[in-house]
Length: 421
Image (cartoon, rainbow, N blue to C red; front, side, top):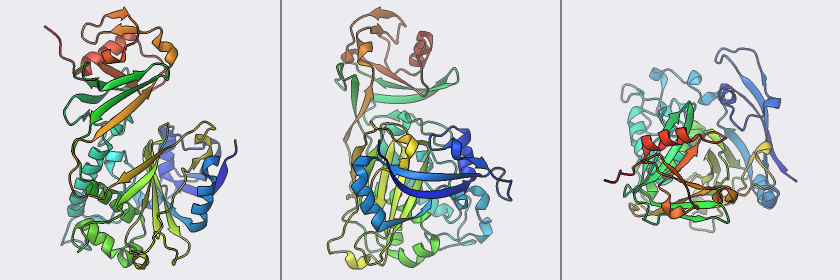
């Protein structure tokens, strides 16, 4: 399999050390070695990273590489708590205030904690701005729907319980015998929300998402981007973007508020990470900065709006550049397929009643040797597989089979089915 090489860069960070302990996939263990203890970290890891892309995206890669250069990444030690300024020295990047006009009592996350971030922080976000941005991040969480639960994404140490808008579908995380699992339940087995294709080995569940405001989701992405760009450049070149983020400027709406990217067929990382790019030619009619964010199964590209050098392009043909999925080579396989994602966030109106699907695959051969299990009685009967009878789906966070007793305990504890009289 031919894999094109993209960027090489060296990471020296305790963030990688923490991830390595968790066995995260993007640690190339054979290239890792420890350096001596420093003032800031007990352990530093130095790792050479090579980002690659599948052959199908070779043309996209060359085009993106010709126009952008890598400016930064989430593995920089400056984003760790150990590097943060004392609170009395801090100035809020988003409102310009410092003590005593505001406080910095909150631990501000560079990427929302709702996406699983527990390691990347900032010292330039005051408490009041943190609370305001938290509302945008909550809208992002509603937009993502059930995916955070299915990915075992922890927020404040817990995987969130998901309920559909009409409470007909629920996903609840728990731990049994020191193993993570999620029980996906529906309240009515006859509601037609779950269909199956036995030949292809797939189960599709449809549910109604909770309401969300697209523009607030867009602001959540914008806040992340303005957090990772150098603060001096944000203050000098992104005043309109800051006004839009804070709802203090005359621009209340962006035509072209989009994010786009890919969904991978596997979990990319337990903790979110990002790469930041900057265009090579200032007069190129593309966005100056481009953020690529990785979390759960998603690779999201975000062209950052309103850089002062880009304003002259507005109203004229303005290119939104495509980008390739970029991962360490060991994560890409010849059969890896990426699903395209395009997110239209061009509305301040609350979206209600939006349908979303989750797809679960299984070995088609197993359907021929299936049995029916009742979560209420715990009894098992040999019967042909019938998706219309599915009331619960168990998703484990580990490989291997689940014992029947474990299955009974998990379902009995988390089912939303009601016992019949």
